Image 1 (spheres, rainbow over the protein chains, first blue to last red):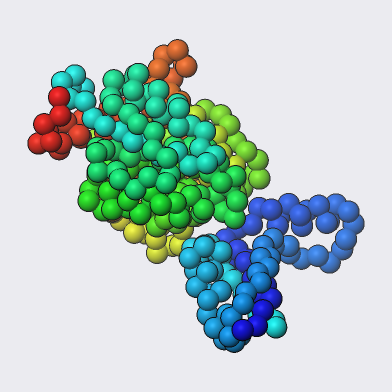
Image 2 (tube, chains in turn orange, purple; image 1 turned 90 degrees about the horizontal axis):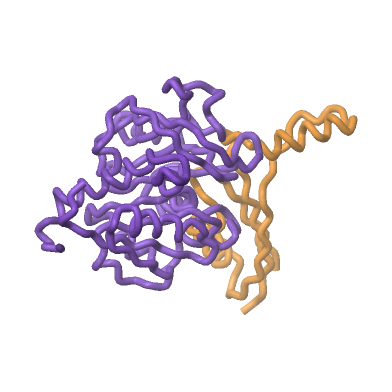
Length: 83
Length: 244
C-alpha cells in the first residue's frame, strides 16, 4: 500500500457562464493588466489516499467526482495522481 | 379549503436550515395542518402526506449549495417518498438540494450579479399541471420574496427543451404586469425560470419563498395559494387514509 497525493481540478463547463471569473477579469483590466482575454474560476481539491496502485486511485477519485466532488451538470474535472 | 381533513407535513431540518420555523408556522398556524420537524438523520417518512425541504444554508453551502445535504440519510427516504407520487416541496436551499439529489434536473449557480438578492419579485404561473399550482391559472402573477445568492438556474439545452415540452416550468420571474424581461430576472436564470417540477408534477423546486407571504401581517398572502393547492390535492387524493 502506498500513499498517493491526488489533486482534483473542478472547473465550470465552458458553456456555463462564470460571473466570478468575469468580475475578476474586469478587475484585472482595471488594475492595468493588458492582454488578459479571459478568467475562469474553479476549485482545487487535494486528497491523500492509500491504495495499491495509481490506476485504482484514479478510478476511485473519478467515482468520488461523479458522486460528490463535482456536479457533472455544470462542472468538468481533471484528476492528477502523484506518488 | 376543506376544514375536515388535516394532513401531516414533515419539514426536513439540515444543519444550517433557517426557514424551517417559518414553514412550520405557515403550515401549522396559518393552515391548521399537523406539522413535524424531521432531523436529517431520520429515515422513516411514511407517516407524512407532504415533505418540505426548507430554505437556509445547509452545511454552510460547502462544496456546492445543497450538495452535502443531498447525501443526508433522510434524502434516500425522501426520494422513495417522491417516487411514490407524494408531494415534495423544496424552497430555496430545498430547491438546491432537490437538483443535487437528482429529483429535479439542472443546477443552481451563483447569481449573475454575484450579489445576494433579497427582495420582492413577481413570478408568472406557467403551468398548472402539478400538485402545487392546481388552484391557480396559467398567466397569474404572484408577488413573492426571494433571498438567495445562488438561484441562477442552469440546465443543458436538451433538459430545457424537455422542461418546456412537458410543462415542467411552473414559475418564471416577470414584471408586475406579467411580462418576461431581462430586467425582471433577478439572478440570470435561463429563460427567467424561478421554479420547476419533475415530470410527474409531484416534486416542486422554487427559489421564491411562499412561506414568507402567507399572512396579511407580513404584507403578502399570495404564497398561500401554493400551500392551498397542496391541501386541495391531498383532499382529493388522500381521503382513503381516513385522517380526520
